[in-house]
Image (cartoon, each protein chain N blue to C red):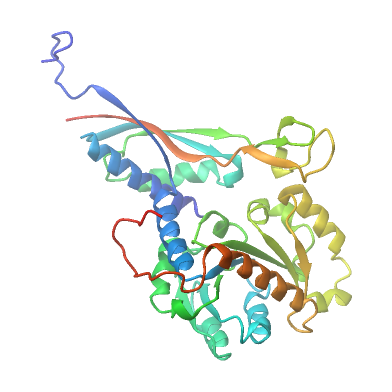
Length: 116
Length: 253
């Protein structure tokens, strides 16, 4: 249940960047979350709803771009989607030469807002 | 009046898009880098110990403190929701220990570790163990400024834990199978299955099976720690340069 701490980080970023751009009402927020972060998207949304109460983002729409985990086997030179964190290469059946290439993302891509 | 088309809409209802591309953990990660800088300036090797509650983190530390002394001076940061119990256990061995009680928080974060450092004689420490809150989920994603993650799995927990909690086992630099003295009583636990499970989620992480009670294989873990410390000291010598606990602009190397 560290989704709450993660979304507190989002609120700090939003507040800082909204202030820097003189945005007084945030209308849309777009996050990118990788599968390997182990975060539950529904919980992220629930925490967002709690945290935006009383802030300039209270009526904002939250979009989450969920990135499936992807791996690359250096031995076979193959890129593939990793189902359920299993790091085994579908070609050679081994996990030792596999590195993850996607799925660790966790960032605020952009947001939209209006100025009074 | 709107300056674009002359309609009656007031200015400011215009939508602006701000591209940010900043990590949500940015604040924690900045503090973690600051903490790591403290460690490096003093030649301290910091090890983050993670596991479920009751897998034997504190017992394992108690068992190796004497084995590492006197050439390696140890200190411990203990993380729990409540009580000073674990820090008190460590202090009985003559080792400095700070207890962080997190209240309701299920993990340690870099700011908590940073505050705890004020209570430790950092110049006299070779290896700092940070015993995270017992939890196989949340601690995995918070950088504390450590140099290595060690994940414990006791034989009573079952041999399929890496498959069930892949994030934390993927983050491990070493996996310790603890309480092997109980293996004769737990026939369901198969060390080979743990290794298969780890290879599915964690690539090539080293595994060591040991017992704090019988001291089986403890020396192998002590040797791993000695080796990590020796490597660390190549780039971060002890008392290599003067360092003050500055909180201004991060120093650029």
